[in-house]
Length: 74
Image 1 (cartoon, one colour):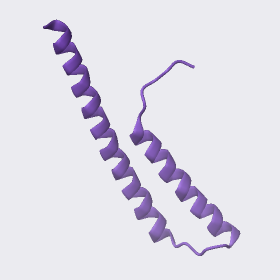
Image 2 (image 1 turned 45 degrees about the vertical axis):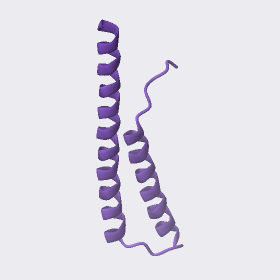
Image 3 (image 1 turned 135 degrees about the vertical axis):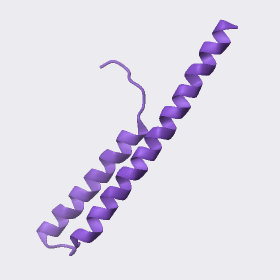
C-alpha cells in the first residue's frame, strides 16, 4: 500500500461511528439501557468535531505547502 497523508478528521468520524455502534450493540444485548436521544446528539457532535479537526488539518497542510513552495522559489 502506498503511503498517504494522515487525515485525523476521518479517523475521529470512524471512531465516533464505532462507539455509537458499540452502544447500540450493548443496548441490544440488554446490558445498559441507552436511549436514542443520547446516541444521536453524540454522533452529530462527533461529526461536527471531526469536520472541525479536518478543516484545521487541511489549513495546516495548505499553509505548509505554500511555505515550501515560496521558499523553493526564492
